[in-house]
Length: 313
Image: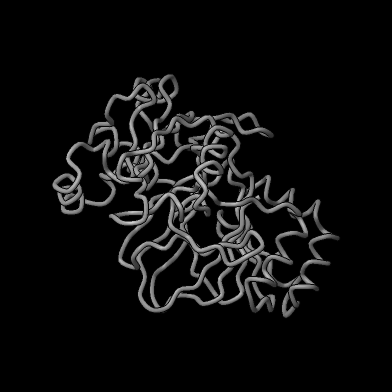
């Protein structure tokens, strides 16, 4: 094991120069060590192997997590490159993505998230990490109890092929409405087809959950990411002019009972997330494995080409 900061823990000497197949064999033989290290710290950076492609990345992922999950219905724009491997969130390079637990709006969210760096950015583009078991202690107890009791309501308005934001066809990776409805019903979502061919989806989920192995309370939601406040005042005003009520924006978040999240409540959460954030600089062929039930990730703005792939399990 190499020297490292708290997040992530770095493994490098043991796998230096290993091909994807060799790294897979190493992981199969050291699964208990990797799981123990992940359980202790929440994130592992595997550095120094020779991976080379998204397909080879899949070979590595399936050593420890044989079944990779589909991202169909996910809240961020991505491209499915095949076999459960997706591009990382395709937002503009100048945009920041706040810390979040992946797909925490679903009843059964992924337990692990894998990342693979094919091409590191010229500047910036880090994937910050943060231990969400530390957030509750940083919130006003009264506010925290409000989040615990109400949870989060996630609202998505998807267009039917033309419009701002994402289409429901891209989001659910199908043009078959019946398939979409089956998916939504399986996840307990409320939905409504619109007269213009669009789709409105509402999902309610807890703001915190107990970690399945440690029992710790973990801040497990994407309220900050989904709420348009994080886009900044100028973008928020433009969306308000285009869509009117915040509930009609392409994405928005509320307390679970439908009441608005105030700017003060938003700022409190954002500040708490900032206090636990740590990061590292990507190198080509880096693989990052994250305990998605405890550790959140985000993205910083960047310059130059950036090619990061993601797998969920």
